[in-house]
Image (tube, rainbow, N blue to C red; front, top):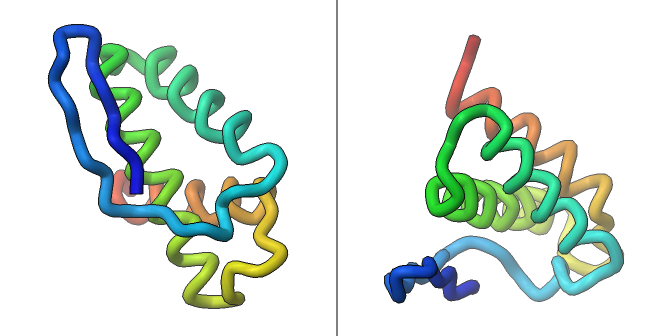
Amino acid sequence: HSVCASPNGKLHLNPTGNAGMSSAGMGDVLSGMIGAFIAQGLNADEAMLLAVYLHGAAGDALAKQNATLGMSATEVTEWARFLLNQICPQ
């Protein structure tokens, strides 16, 4: 789990994510998601909270399907896309 802190001192506990996400590229994926959400009009706090939650939820879905050992950032990205489309269908 992650603690997300805003500049105003507000703390948020994110319930998603798992130990399998401690691998190369995961931080790059997360920062890219935050940047993408900001580019789509969310403010920094909203983008951070959505990205951290979605990133962790994607990792949890991947772990449920394949276990945590050997999890890759690319796989998490694919699951994040799938979950985002479930949340925000076009």
